[in-house]
Image: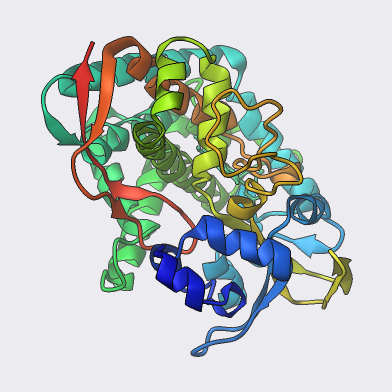
Length: 407
Ligand code: HEM
């Protein structure tokens, strides 16, 4: 964001549905203005896109996440589906399912997230990250997104689901087409086709696991019982897909964001390098600072008051984690990147009953990158302009030219 546009733009007039807004404007500034001037903000309808509420203060965001009586996830949980008025996976995919069925499916999935299995997968994350770093550290400029970050999370979820190695690159390519596009020109048709390819792929894998189950999450979904019955095929497939979606993009964005933040905050890089801060505490601050999933959302199912504003039955309410995580009431000096920050109860993984199922793995990814930086790198040099994602949902970079100087 340039100082000029800061002077002329009134943050309450910006269109929060438009992905371009997050490229043109400094979001930290925009959220600060909204928290101060219009904390429960009505984003006006524009160009055929319906209006919706944007909740930006930490306490209000938490209160809506917790309030499953007045808000539902079953009519979408991100702007794109909420504004369409429905989500085709409603009631079939964990993140867009409410109530008892949500709890039962979540418990089934959690069984295959046992500490033993997660520890094993986290160890594979560390090994893979070390291997990727060995290929780029001390080798001149490269793209951290393409050469390192893009290869970590998809393989983790591949391990968790036991996806054959030979299929993983194809999954990365389909997945890249599904969520955040790189510009407004990229096709929606392509996005839709890629999503169907992923769903069909998991249909085949689930079928195979039903015959030959292992201790992976696909086997758990394909063979487990929910409320006394096996899960229907479409629910198995949607839940596999939601793991891929959740696991891949957000984790990548937080590791890429970590490199940029450390390069731009040399004192914090030194603190990490010298061991003045723990990897755990640094990981939490990277997650707060990068907040890759900018928002999630709900639809009101009754008239309800939030932060002094009346939300009407049927209204769309978006919860901006990216704003809540910079709320000075909870994070003193919020605009300072401070790896030693404690407490650090950020909302990068959401809050309440839908709290991220993969938080342990998200943390493992960021932690592995920070550990490799500390162990093998003496200096981080940004060597070109990062490429920003074009999205109103995921914040981050699809390209980050950098040089990592060896110890
Ligand atoms: C839910 C963020 C990594 C799987 C969520 C939610 C957030 C989030 C904010 C809440 C959604 C809502 O309230 O509607 C992140 C971030 C990650 C990350 C920032 C990485 C840094 C992962 C990973 C996995 C995963 C690695 C899979 C292994 C899921 C699933 C849900 C979820 C299945 C839905 C949970 C439910 O509805 O009960 N994630 N996530 N996420 N995440 Fe993550």
